[in-house]
Length: 147
Length: 147
DNA sequence: TATTGTTATACTCTATAACTATA
DNA sequence: TATAGTTATAGAGTATAACAATA
Image 1 (cartoon, helix red, strand yellow):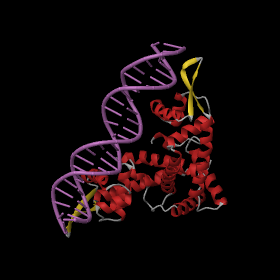
Image 2: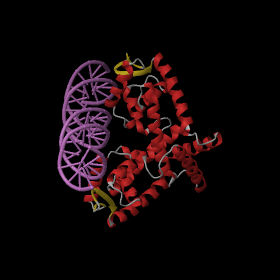
Image 3: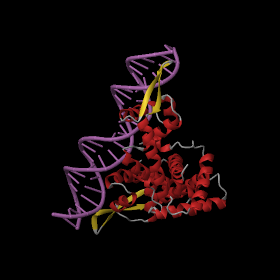
Image 4: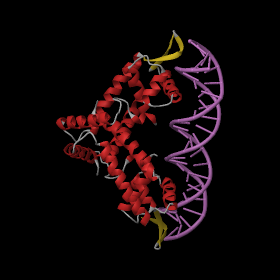
C-alpha cells in the first residue's frame, strides 16, 4: 500500500475517532476548530474566521449561534464599525478549551499507541514536512469544511 | 502539534486531493473503492460488498448502477440462487483499473514529494503499524462511508 | 455603492424502511 | 418465513443568493 493511501485511510479514521471523543463534550469538530481559532486569535470578525476555516460566512453563523447560546463564545460589536462582530471566548469557553486539550492528548495517545516515544517524534517530523510542502495551514483542519 | 492532529489534517487533505485526481476519470472515491474491491474479490454478492465497504446495501445499488451503465462492472445472477447478483469487472473495467492505479501512483508521488525514498519507507512502516493496531482493514478506506 | 452579518431557498446526499422476487 | 436486491421517503447538511444594517 502507498504512503498516500495509508495516510488518507488513517487520517480519516483519526478524524472520525476524534469526533466521537469530543462528542462527549457536546461538540462537533468544526465547533472545536472555531473555539481553538478564537482562543488563538481573539477579536477577529466573522468574515475573517470563516475565511481561515475555509467555510462560507453564512455557515459560520449557525456555528457561532450554538456556542453563543451556551455561553462559550460571545460577539462584541466594534464601536468604530458597528457592522463588525468580534468573537471572543468567555470564561466558560476558556475552561472548555482546557477540556478540549485534554481530550486531544488522550486522542493522540490512543492513535499513536503502537509507537514508542522516539518513533512518535520521527512520525511527527515526517508529517510536519509533508504538511508544509503541501501548503497546509498549521492547526487548521481541512475537514472543518464539511460536517 | 500532535501526531494525531497532523495525521488527521494530512489524511483528509490527501483524500480530497485524490478525489480531485480521479474526477478526471469521471469517478468518485467510493466508486473507486468499489472497483478495487470487485477486482480483488470478483463474484461477491452486493450484500457482502456493502458490508466490506461499510455502507448500507441500498446505497450500493446506485453505485453499481452507475458503473454498470458505463460498462465497468456487471451483475451476474447466480443460477443456484437467483436472488444473488455476483459482481464482476468487465474488460473495460480492467482497463479503467489500470488507469486508477496510475493515478494512485501519481497521487502518492505528489503527496510524499517532501520525502526521499528512505524516508517514505520509514513513513509507510510507521503508518502500517498504526493502521494494524487501530484495526483498520487493509485497502478499505473509512471515507467510502460518506461521499 | 460596498461590506458585514443574517436569513431563505433550493439542492445533494443519506439512512430507514417498505417493497419484490426468490428461496 | 427469511433473505437479496431495489425503490421510496423523509431528514440532515450545505452553498448560493437575497436581505438588512452600517459604512
